[in-house]
Length: 221
Length: 234
Image (cartoon, rainbow over all chains, first blue to last red; front, side, top):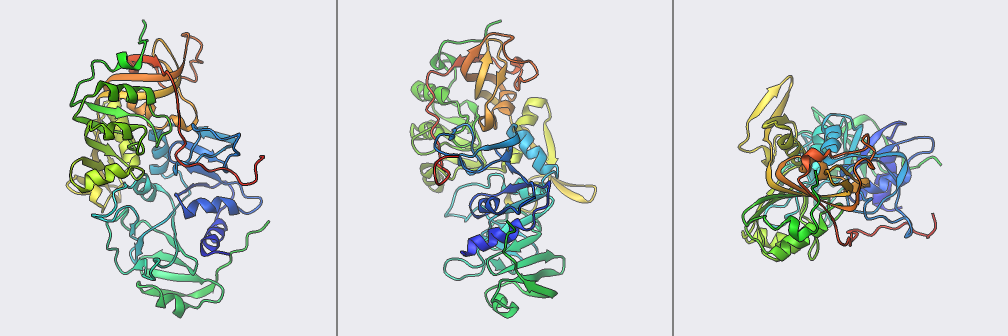
């Protein structure tokens, strides 16, 4: 099991029946593949769709039916389409149970940076700033460290922010971290890891929860 | 009443250099392909564009960029256009990136006669710099201004000669909001039908917002990111 798959499987266990969820581009999109049996989740895509299904077959492929990552998708029965202004009204208006997105940096205050590297990358924030400002619960799903071993979970973000104190939880292949007013609380560690090992790979100070447990990545069914 | 024009070229014939133009679409989905091609043929310059994206290298608004027609752009994501990134890093194009939902609402407000509004989006980020903020209840908000354009170019699925429009799936995106927010709205459609054929309960853009309508000659509809289910049959 890859690190990304562990992250996707763990987050999928958080879904409750009837949730409306927006999945960010990249790793978060993988989560849709691990929804527990008996749980109905409606995925929203901010380009204007509720009830996003999986990828199409070559015959089903339709250029008028894409997700926010511009990938072709399918419809699930009961899906609906709407304009961008309504899509973000439902996001900003607090109707999304969960927004799961990637990050470049997160810090002890729950600040998130995931949209730009000044002087190097000109892409844009897309819908990320609206999602983190509007969703009821914001979960960051990302690999724990950068490719060269640097920490992504910092005392303070150094890149321009996507949102200020917006992150509720951080999930990596190594652990689950809950953001609280007191700081980052380590609540789960991956099988074979311990709190000291996770802290050694993290710049931010972690408060070890008295109920620290092993991260479960099994998906029923 | 008949708003039908015979071609995209005729529809854009009086658009002048320096205009502020909204273009519908999300990525390459639901973009006014035929109107963009006509604008490129017309060869006007110094345009101030408002669109969520900037096409890709070689298609959609990427063609306008390559023809040197765009002076400034307001959008939310331009990551699929390397040429734009180079122009911006060199300081040759004035790019303003704003959150996608704020972009959509600024356009909606522009069409609805609302000059400004407060949102929580972007608080504590560069987006809120130099903007008024205000505490309402227990939360802080940023004041955002409405957007309005000289011209809106939108793409719908079907329309009638009165300008009523319906859209197809996620090709709707920014098109209906933009149709409301310009002095001149031009809609291109895949199929023109008789008034009364569109179910009045299903019309998304009522004709009052549309000034000109035309049937697009050809739709390439390229797919930006091919993503097919492994293993073939459904």
